[in-house]
Image 1: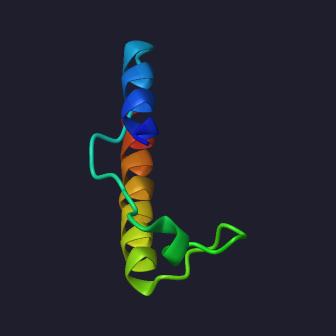
Image 2 (image 1 turned 45 degrees about the vertical axis):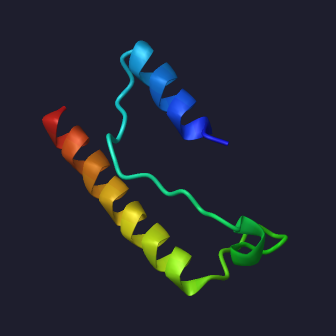
Length: 66
């Protein structure tokens, strides 16, 4: 499912601030995330943490622009 694409399109149409890229697409999700929604795959977790740090920097930059 590409809900991210639809959400980006929606947010852009209402002048929302949207992180342009990157995005996280997880294949074989049942093997990488447990029944509680916890990421169990180390590679996926590393990518997720990296993207989260990029997102935090994006928000801090947007806030600084005011």
